[in-house]
Length: 491
Image 1 (cartoon, helix red, strand yellow):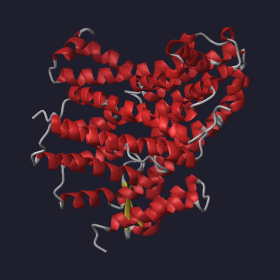
Image 2: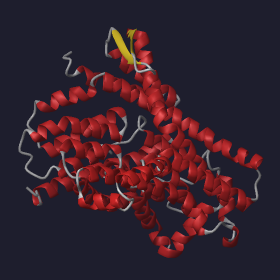
Image 3: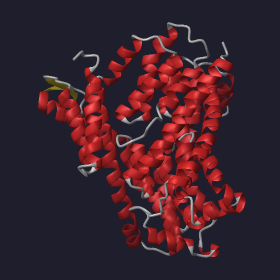
Image 4: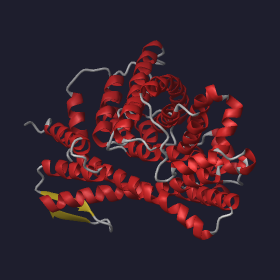
């Protein structure tokens, strides 16, 4: 077979193995993803592999041993990026549930918006809060609120979970603080301001439509609140029956969620200000001057970058959440240790499965799926907005990560857009790539496993709800972008 098409065969075979392995053979997801990664690696037919070592040097391995080393490195690289934040977010979720803090926040939501608009309140708050936060982390922080809200109202669990998913997934692909959008903005050479304004505006439209679709899914897929390994159902029910006077204050209930978001956002603000000041932008220059000049700004930024690091920010949130739990329930260190164990066990499973998905994605990258898409795309005359979406879709489905899909798609599309008449402002290409990158989340996506394991849904239920929801959002986003590019090309 032509080398152009062989990577697609590798993709099809490995994806089919995952589906059959998990769905029919009942393999554990971790095992299925690892085996699929090995299959994809072996099918590349390489006689030797060059693997980068811990010290930065490169070592050559034979065909079989090199395949195993490549898969191991892909797993380790993914675990490095996610392990600490997933574990800390799981602790925050547990502490919020056990202390009654999540229930306190939900009660305020219901009092302010009413039960009928509770889902809209959850959607709006997640959309605004998730701008600087990775989807996986945001879901871990917001899922306890959705669980408690469903127990409080006695219905609509799928709706509340999807409200968080709709908002968090859109901002993850459309707002600049996230690495995927940052890369696309840089490759397409559009301004950060333009990407933020249009990304948030169009994203809000798609979020509203997506939430209406969530109502449709909620009516057709009934999922009870089962709790999770991090938050047992018995604890959820017991807290929900407590009078308001026995719950922590609203301030201390919301701080473990809000403070990490604020700290991470602050780091982003300082980063944007530093880069803009170096380019001579007026507002940034004034911002730097407020700290006594560049030297004072740099001194403050050292500490901001430290406490705003996602792991440190979540550690601070976890510490506060545990302190609130200990004070509210009058618990000693021994009891706190017992309560922390189950969420860490759940987090460990999510980390393993997600890391195996990262290994699978690395295997597909080494198989040349991205290069094959680029070669195939260059041979056809097609609307570049649609092509950018299609390229992002293929990469997303192949390796799972929305960020990697955006990075790859933008690197492919940028030269093509620069060398042709796009016919509209490049911000539309930016948005089409972002919406393509959220298409069909499934077993090789860390977000899929975060939603499945932390919501208590089975893999089948997650596919019927979360995966369908994101696919609809992706398609609706493409339609909106195509319409706007024709009606308001801005050229």
